[in-house]
Image (tube, rainbow, N blue to C red; front, side, top):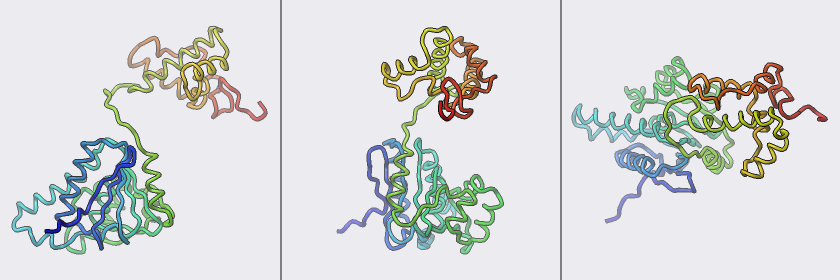
Length: 311
């Protein structure tokens, strides 16, 4: 007995999980596709990649749903279970703890479009088009796509896409805020992979509080650097040099303050101090005076360092 090919596979490229749908000729949704998608989401939840890319083989992303799926439904209970499973799959994709990118190189209908909307970012080839055409057979989108469209494009646009059952090109949906980027057709797959890799992040859990982790640790360090300078311990340049050489930081505290913006840095310190009343978060007076003088860093041309031409 020959086993049927699995319509969805997952490969890893470092921290990037590449989900490939390959069920020729049209990548239609059927029960085998449903089971493979559920298994794929379970694998992604279990392995925690840094980013996920959904991509499709063939001339189209998907032509929609194989209508024979409905032939096997014998009662309302089975129908309810099918649609509940579809909603749950999209919800689980949306809840993945890493950036998710959907790459559409061609025609993308019904379930494929809804899967795209469950992802964080949608990339489309200039040749791609999208449609929620369920209305042509008396159905409505079944994976939460209507609500996600409203989040991206507004209620009016979402109603139009669902009620008209028309197809829309990638450029139009980019203008409406549904598609994030439209890329050239030539080299689209490689560009999508590169983009998804660049999105890769390692998630961490943290209590909901001001500063979370990074800012709560970073800004006392920046604030104390200003304090050392204000006290005359060392120059701006020497403090930056010491931290780059001694700690291996890519830039010193003053270069970073100027990059972030002194006004932004002061606002973050004030917010941290308001919540915790920790003296480490109490902005050094020099920082406040510089903001008052509109010496804000790179954005104003001068901060702790001088960015004006010829200086």
